[in-house]
Length: 312
Length: 256
Image 1 (cartoon, rainbow over the protein chains, first blue to last red):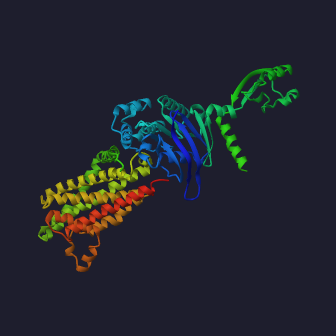
Image 2: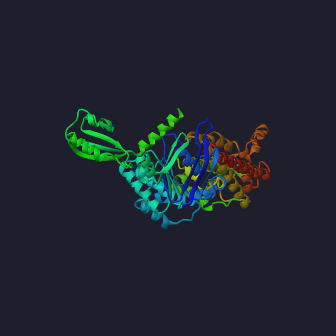
Image 3: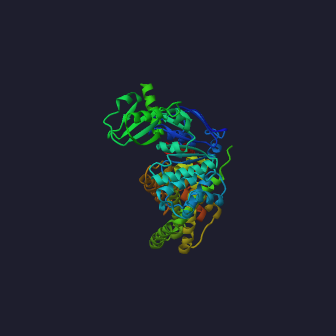
């Protein structure tokens, strides 16, 4: 699939000397969803801001749909929609007018039928005549998405779309993103909620201190870094891991009710069957077993820690 | 040559005018009330004791000055508030990420601010007809001065709005600089009525040239040559545009 965004050696150094981006290169295909992960101040928002035109880069190039964001900024910006991190809406303006306004700003003629479609898709149609200040936080965020979609962009940037929203609303946002994906919109999102990236993104990019540490397909990353843990719940608590099983890498929970066993799900032999057999032979009675894959948070932390160690 | 994004200009203009009409009572009624008070106080009460200024009844003489006072105040406040409010509410990001450049943003905001100021000035003119009767010698030049002044001071207001970091700064220049300049610019008197020294000082005030030119379009009377007035206001437009272009090019008080 053709790349819709090509970032080449992009850097941004602020006047104070802070390097927010340090030679970032990334290519994003049309129709994919990519999640950018990183701690606060890693450079995620700066990267988005440069591509969208809010921040002027100090080096490198960005092309959107083949248009250079600096030389051919009008054509590049027409392809982009941005949902900012902070909720920023004119408090007295009606929802419908807000979205119409953005469409006009992008040089598109008025098309109320299209706006009706996006407001309905975002469950805002009933609120079209309400002033934005009357809306709940979740609705305001959806208005921002509607505005970002008003000019039918090919690329949508979501800067921490679910920061500070409750679980139900977060799920609702994921649903919206899912629908956009089906319509073929390329989505770049930044997030602190790693579950979010895991849930939605085709690829994950990890940024720290202005450097793009890696970009991998989410499933591959999970497979590579994602060890699995088997939790064995016991009928009777154990005082310690049985001596005969000491070399299996087992750990016992504080209350002695659970044994944890880490294994590689991709290995030829996981050792689970043997472990369960040995437990039975030791007279340990098993009540239940469950498995859990390490989430992106753990993957992310191990990556960031890894860079700290390699830098040390 | 880049094509201008006219839909973008219209979107901003329309958005600003909608805000004006949403608050039509404050927008239109308050300047009319305050101008009426000026007519009552200066035109009727004090003007009754001043027979005429250079052959023009005092009540009629102050009409151009009052219109200028309103145009200047309204142009500056509309344009400065227009661009400051998105900065305050955070919606300024939209203007910076969309395919509109300094020219579209300026045309939208300044065009709307000037249109509102002119609309209010016309209402004041109609109000003045009730008090002093209609008397415009050069209607075309009257409109030309009105238009250029509204554009010039809307551009200045736009710069103030871009510069301001809070509501206090938004108010300070109109209050501390513009209003005194208008009052000292011959809104209520002719510069000829001042002693020679103060007349020379008054001629350093740029607003004098606007009021003088505007008054000439009404009565054929001017403190300074009309050509000088026109050049002064045209120069102001050019300088303000250059400043705005610089602000957008550097992102000063806009980006980062």
